[in-house]
Image (cartoon, rainbow, N blue to C red; front, side, top):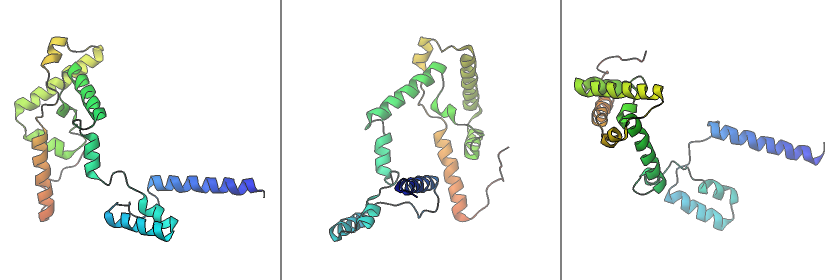
Length: 185
């Protein structure tokens, strides 16, 4: 065996280790950065321990909720503001609201929240969805004057959805059974 084979085997092993890590293979719990870990990093650097230093300095990108909120906040991040404006324009073209995009078949909580809303609001939601599907099939958009009247981020479902989720969490905390055994079709 020549030296190239050993290098190839090492490369293959590194690739399989990386894939296992990405898939969530035999790994420990995700690393959570903290002041203690940073101090351990500094001490290991002083002591010359390179392996421990690399482990202590590895940061989980989703660990800091403040960081994630800052990145996704349109007031703080211009890219998030651009994305929000794009979504708003697309919803206006079809006359939809953002809450219309929630699918009752996806979550039982959404289905329950829609069932609790007044009938007029649910009928208006269904009418907006039907109009959007009709416009999409015709490859057309709403007229500009109607697009200007649309309010895509005016919420009607989120408050009721939050109430349903709070009730569900309270029932779980008390150990009570759900109001009804619901299953998805």
